[in-house]
Each structure stands twice: as C-alpha cells, then as structure tokens.
Length: 128
Image: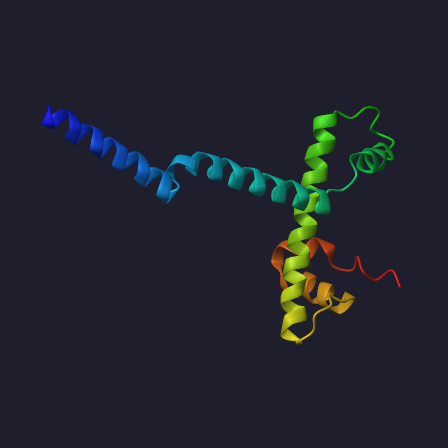
C-alpha cells in the first residue's frame, strides 16, 4: 500500500508541477501563438497584395490574349509583388549609403545600373 500512496503522491506532484509551470496550458498557448503568427502574416499579405482584377485587366490589354486562367493571374500577381519587393530592397541599399530614409528615382536608377539581373530595365525610367 505504501507503493500505491507513493505513486499517487508523485502523480499529484506531477499534475501540480504541470499546472504551476503552465505545461497543462502549453497547447493552448501554442495554438494562440500560431494564430497570432497567421494573423500577422495575413496582415502583411494584405499590405503588399496587388489587386487581382487590375492585373487581369492589364493582361487582357494584350491583343493576343483572349482568356486568362485565374491561377495564371495569381502567379503573375505574386511574381510582380516579389519583383517589386526585391527592387525596393536593393534600391534601399543605395538610399542607406547616402544616409537617407526615402527611396528616390536616382536610387532606383543606381540599382538598375549596378545589379546585373536588372539590366533589362535600363532606360525605363527616362520617361520624364
């Protein structure tokens, strides 16, 4: 009988330990943390998301395109967002070198002239 009581005491101590350390609620805390992370990611996505309808309209401006799949529109939109993000980050490097906080046209031009992958954009900002 002493062994049964010892087992009961250790089970109680273990349960009390779980309650005191929060291990009993760790699943709830983890779920809440995951929900918060998802919410933050969704908010970030909403900030950078280009309108799919507008992208579809731009695609359909091409006389060779009659119909466009919604998945293709999504992929083109996402690719455009990633390209803009990359261009902005690269341009900000030149902005930071000049100890400024606002990206200007000259920073984008410097990026285009100095990054090999962006060579196809040379001369595209000469519209003014």
